[in-house]
Amino acid sequence: MNYSKTTKKFEDGVEKFMKFAIANTKGSSVIRCLSTKCMNLSFRTDKVVREHLSFHGFDVSYTTWS
Ligand SMILES: [Zn+2]
Image (tube, rainbow, N blue to C red; front, side, top):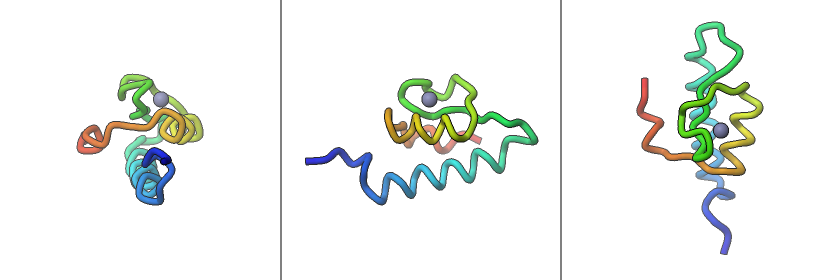
C-alpha cells in the first residue's frame, strides 16, 4: 500500500500550493516551505520546496495561511 503522497490528489495539492506561494513571493526568489521537515519556518527556492513536499509531505492545514 502506497502512502497517499504518491497520489494524483497529493500532486494536485502540491501544484496548487506552489502556484499560490509563487504568486505571493512579492518578487522574492524564495517561498516558505510547508514540508513537515521545515514546518513553514524555512524559506527555500520553489524547486527545493517542491522536492520537500514530495519527499516529506506537508500539512494541509497550513495552506490556509495568507
Ligand atoms: Zn521543506
